[in-house]
Image (cartoon, rainbow, N blue to C red; front, top):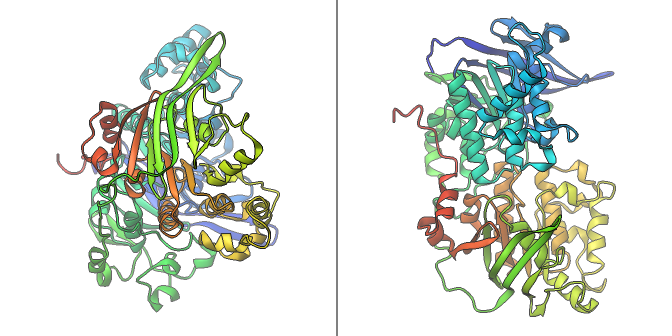
Length: 607
């Protein structure tokens, strides 16, 4: 990307406020950046940092209760004072948006090609003929790597990765000059994520577009972006080229985010989670926004707001102590320990699966999901189950906990035959459910929004033990690192990480010996993810729990498991100690998973 390339987007001192009668709350506070033609910038930060609000302000898509001020110019034209009618012409042709969940962009009652066709126009702006729209829609599907027949499918008939490609094709239908992609790869499995990121990068380079990639995943940002902008509590804290931030962060927040990232190559002794959560911008308006969570905080950080200043060519930071503390960054780099998984496998399994098969009826045919699955988890052991979406991982977990009935094979949980939950005596069924519990990916969906946290936990505790012997809801909350006072709150009043801790507390209510964690950290911010993974380590150490981790994230698997099973198309294709499998994969599918892990881009290294 040339330094002389045209500036497509210029954002200056952007503020977004929530307005209500007699009140105003700052949500984005003084953000400035620009995007040039053929350039990709990353906007990274935790939930609540203002990333998505900034994107919506650029496109004029803020709800009526929010007001944007400052300046947003697209090719020199001020957008904040542009009428809605004029903005609607810019959307799609000038700037286009791809959202995190493609299914929110796609109507379930319309075929895939219809979403693309409605965006298409002739060069003079007139509507194309039906046949021309059909042909162009099929061409656009081909551009994002899909066959023309996909155009005849409805959104519910395609996978998440395919839906994201359809959404991208629709976003590109009017040939925009700038594309904003808001968390486009979150919650996708690792190979699909790699395909979507490669597709975005190739499309941007082929079309010479500007690209703004919004993500909470630093690995994703480093693999795609020329420059990275670090957001926090509605402010911009650091700007630099991807390689520079990765090798030498100049703000404590960026440094701590990098420490919290799990590493697919090495196991960290401790994942350096950032205590607390992102504050409201209004609560830190007159100080360094990161000061309440910063290890290096001093009085001057609490009494004035540090400006973001240039510290080198193209480098900006908002830390007034950087020259004093940068040396400490290197001294606090995490130690690594790859001793996990190098011992002998225990001989006393709490879970044993033998020759398991599962099929579903599909019309007159049969869809085979699992074939000849053999798996063991010992008491106190942590085992990973990894593979792409659709590989059968979650179906296996649902069979283990009795939510699905296996077609064939045997499941033994704590010495009890749990192959057929329906036929089991009630006493044995209850024994199994006290032995194994499941923690799901989306804690909000698994918690009743109308009930307090205390009521939810007390309901689970009633089946755990006699009232005189069981812990209180407050005890469970403290076990997972939450104040006992949270028992009075409802799920909507908690962050994503806090809700996941509540879900874990509920699973612990029956004192299980095995926890099955189904993608339970995949949608969390990197720092919150580190907090939850550290909690799992503590629970294993303190309670002797066994874990079965179901995930597509090999970096997470490295940090928390002793052994792993690799699943592809319903079959286990490789198993062994975690270190051995990840360092020396023997199956081509395992190697493909490892090759799909986002790696830093080479665009700025001269390689």
